[in-house]
Every structure is written in C-alpha cells, then in structure tokens.
Image (cartoon, rainbow, N blue to C red):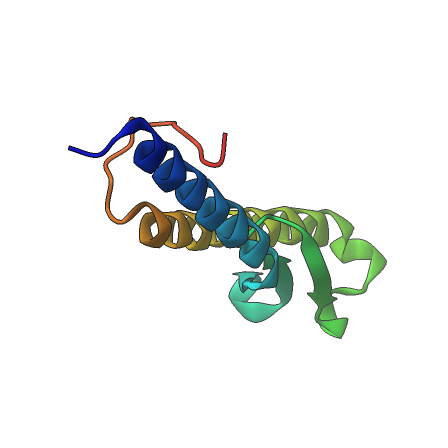
Length: 107
C-alpha cells in the first residue's frame, strides 16, 4: 500500500498532467459549419473563436436574417465539436476514469 508521500506525489503528477492537457486544448482546432458550408467557424477546443468565414453569396442586405441564423448555427456546431475534443483529451488524461455526469476537470 502506498504511503502518504507517494499518494501526494501521484496527485501532484495527475494535476500537472491535467494542467498540461488543459493548456493543449487551446492548440486543438475544430470547425463548425452551417448552410452547407456557406458559414464556417474555426474555434479552439477551449471554445475560443479563431475565425469566421462567410460565403460572399450571403452578403446581400436581404439575406441578413439568414446570415445571422447561419452564424449562430456554425458557432453552436463549433462549440459542440470543441466540447467533444476537450472531453476526448480529458479522457486520455484521466485514463478512462469514470467521472460523474457534469463533472468538469480541471477543478
């Protein structure tokens, strides 16, 4: 059975791995798409928006409401993919440890 010092060392190593994984999430890019590719949003796995691309065909005053809807849809698509990428990265770090639903790491 490990002693207290060993347990503390393991906890510190696990925390360091989680912090590195969390920092790495900002380097992972995902792309949200809507309107069949007319609107594209690039984001980091942490949810930071990197770029917004809107097809020129949508840049008509009469298309304003549709463009707004497509941008919102692409943002939501990018966010869902960012969450998925973050969950995958954290799953790798936690080594398959089953965490309660809604439990976010790092703390």
